[in-house]
Length: 355
Image 1: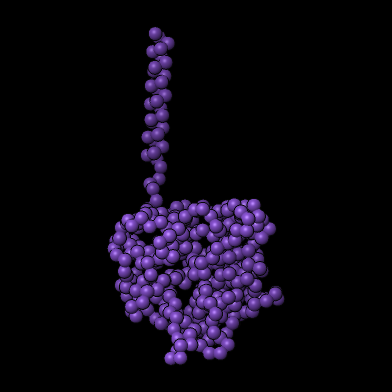
Image 2: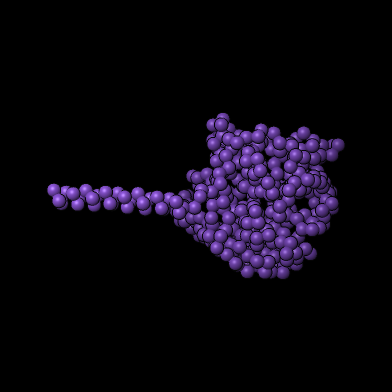
């Protein structure tokens, strides 16, 4: 009986200890990250004028020899636009006047091959080019002179923000194409292209001829509340829907906001291409099984959003998708034609958001 009594006491003590451990471990855990719910809806239409403090239309000059075949990534300095156009980088003044190609596409030491991303760094007053086949970030003056470079294995993204210059690379992709593991690496650089942080973003198993995907306007890094907001989308053919925005603390990625895309109409979201933001707004470009591409604009003050299946409504009544320049301003592209129907170079609509 005595042994049974102490045995029961021991069991009770063990259960009590477990409860106490569970209680204190739960009470000391950090609070959950903020969750952005797509069910908190303000509507399915939003006028650009409701959220913009200024909207400037800039028709890009069109004449023989300077027609843009594909308007890809766009960045801007205080005086110029730089546009990535199928491997070449074209420069326009902010009034739309054509200036010329920046640097040259080629194999010389000061030329680039496989330009996959561009960004203008206001601090160093230089254009940064993620050149995959150079395996480097190349730094050019506004006149097109190569003034610096830093080696990275197959960089595919560069973005100069207030929180540093951000680079993503998928080193080893060509060497481990079949059945290997692809490592996506992230780096933060200063204006001298010196690495201040590096991190393993994710590992991706490679199956057969899997290749990297690309959404040409994609920004992976924005600024939220004076912190870098980092969104790493599905770059390869992964069976995962990424829905979390991160920030960087002491060299580690920390969850910042989670996006719950559980729509009331039971739409199944397949990909979130990018999450960017400025001031009071998040802009989330996504696709679903029912709709190829949509825009979700979340008002942080109202804790609710707008589900815009065809984009945001401009003054002309048409809808457009906003894309981030990378420095807080946004743009969209208007396709236009002359009286004969000949398609002109596009109009870049430069948007500054309300505070």
